[in-house]
Length: 460
Ligand code: ARG
Image 1 (cartoon, rainbow, N blue to C red):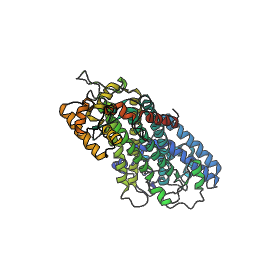
Image 2: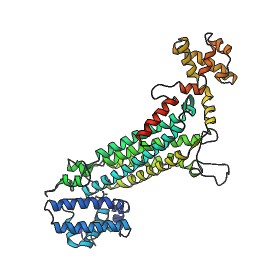
Image 3: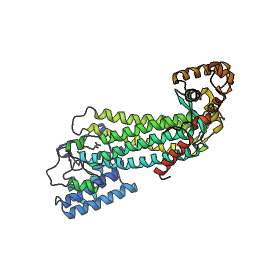
Image 4: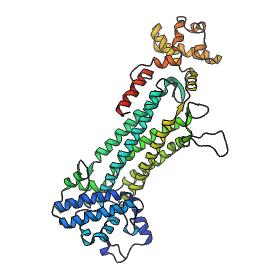
């Protein structure tokens, strides 16, 4: 039997493999609510414009309501023979309300319909992700306030560089997430145009009112070019790229948690809720959730690269290739949402070992810059020379296997005779962080002020 929605010119139905490769209902069933919402706005506009009668529009709207109820209740029978969500809904509508259902598709095509559904779906998805990102920011800010003055090593090249505070480190991720949210909201704003009424590609000869449907569906305006409306998926690409960047941020934090939780670092402890054991080694507490947040980043990148690749060679306008836009998008949004939830849970429960962090902060001559700065400030030594003097002292300490603060004043003066006892004041890690008062620096007072400002912005 040929397809009952478009089979007029066909003698037979599709080959079984044709049906399988062509169908999208296995994944676009997720657009059920959006599809019905769009159809309701469309039919209300058709009636307002006198394109269908009020009676037919009322019957269609009522039928759509019933279909929505069936989908929500899980009783709707999805059929692969009907290809996609659009034809599944319309076919069920026809069964419920009879011939009037056939008027719904006037002045519309599945091409503008699917572009509309995707934009509506993404809008909700972006809002949910944004709420989760704000939740993670709140968890980080709360921890940062608690540990604004907890000294830890700051690294470059994963080598101890200068002491920083744990609160400062966490606030770095709050900033990143703030920009992630900004990127998502930019994508949402640019995506807030309604493609409905672009029809197949060229627009329609019916006197439709696209402003009316755009408004009814909560968009800022209708899209301005019918070809563009049905052929681009940049709204998905932008969202996916914002998701991919956020996934990078989460992955880096996850990697740090994995490192910090090792017995060798011992900076943090994940709660039992966020750790797993080993089936063979009884002593282990594995940070599986952090590893998975790091690992799942690949799926989000994959979705972005996949869709970029699908789109890059397509002539305007719609091609069926574009049906491949959905699975990656659904997976990426779901994955990022899961990672945000896991990270928020891990951070909320995280405890730290201040003593271990502080001891590590002093290791590796991390206050060498403070010594050089002291020479510049107190002895007016040019920085390059101060760097050299400090380097010699580090070499001396390192040869003896001691810290800078363990050298005697005489040792120091053997390299630079003008050094005084006062220098020992800047060699402690707490003094070091407290001195970093420049805007954005790691001094605990700065960190506290920044954390409080974020808490106020986030309504904590
Ligand atoms: N299932 C299709 C998709 O996801 C809907 C649009 C179909 N349009 C068409 N001309 N066959 O892209």
